[in-house]
Image (cartoon, rainbow, N blue to C red; front, side, top):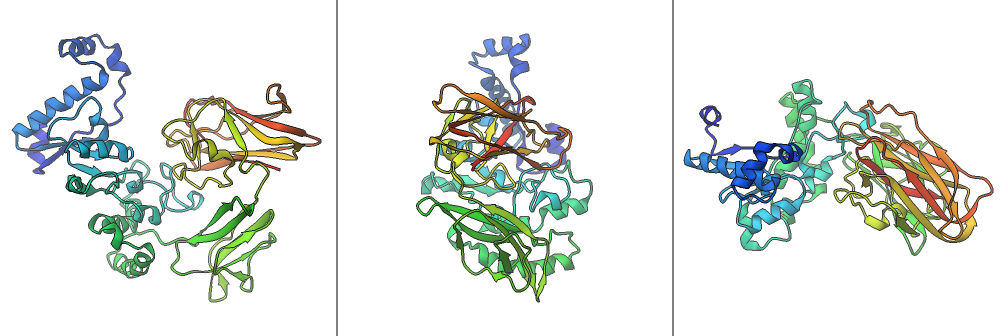
Length: 442
C-alpha cells in the first residue's frame, strides 16, 4: 500500500474486497487461530478484521479506504467508503450507517452486450442497451432526504478481458458512457430518454471528429408483447435504437416491404401470430427483419408448483414467471429469467384434463458468466397430480465451451395426449446457473 500511495496521489485507495471465497479460511488452522484469538464469530468478520486493519493504516497516511460492497459483511470500518455493485441493498445499509457510497450497479457495467449478441463482438455476457444505462437511478428511493448526501454518485465499469484493443474498449464505452454521465450529473425529474436520444445525434458527430470508435445505433428491433389477462391477448409494440424510425410490419409470416403496415401505435393480437418487422428509410429496408411469434397460449396464468426453487439472486417474477405470458429477452437480468443453481423441477396445473399438442420451454447458454443448459429436459403428465408418467426426454448438442450467447427451446410435439398436470424436469449437470423463462403449452 505504501508503494501504491507513492504512485497514486488520490485521496481514495480502492482495496477491493469482493468475491472472496471463505472456504479456504474455514479450513486453515492459522486463520481459525486468528479468528479465535480476536474473538471473531465467522469468516466474514475475519475478512472485516483485515479491512479494518488496512483502513486504519490508510487513514494514518492521510488516505481513505474504498471497497466493493462485500466489505460490509462482518462490519464496516468507521470511515470506509462503499462501492455498491450487488444491488441496492448493500449500498442502502451503508448509507443508513452514515458511510459514503458510490452506486455502481449492473446497469453501469459497459462490458455487457449493447445489442443483439449474434451481431456483436464476443463479450462476457448480459445485455445492456443504452436505454438501460440511461434509466439507472443511483439515488435509492428508500433513503431519507438528509441521507442523500452520502451518495457520492455512480461509476461506469468496463472490464476488458474480452477486449483485445483500445478500439474495442471505445466501442463498448461509447455512447453508453455519455448516458451514464448525464445520469450522474442530473436529477431524475430532469431526465427524459427521448430528449436524450435527440441530443445524442449531435454527440455522434463530436465522437466522429475525435476519431472515437463508438457503437452505431442498431436497426435491430425489439418486439414488446405485453399480456392482457382480461382480453387474453398480447399488446404489441416495437423498440428501436434508431431515432424516430419508420417501422413496418406484417402478421402473416411474410417479410415486410415498403408498403406493409406502418407502426404508429401498439396493437393487439387475437391469436397466434407470426410478426415480422423492420426499419425502413426512403422506401428501402434498413437492416434485418425481426421475427416474433405472439401467442396467448394455454398455460398463461396457470398455477405452477416448484419442487425445487430458484436462486435468491435471480428470482425474476417468482412463482408467476413461467406462466405470465412474457418471454425472456437477451439478458437474464430482465427479471423474466428464473436462475437455478440446482435441478429444475416444476408442475403446471392446467385446471382440467384437456388435449395437449405441444409443450416448450427455453433455456439460456452463456458460459462466460457460468450459464449452461441442462443435460436434458423431460416432460411428464398426470391427471391427478400424484402419479406422473414420462412421455419424452430431449437432450442437446451445445458445446459447453462455446462462449457465444445462445438459446435452446426444448419443444415436445405430442400426439393423443390428454392431461391436467404437466411436469418438467431438467438436471443441472454443469453445476453453474440454468436460466429458464416461459413454459409454452398448446
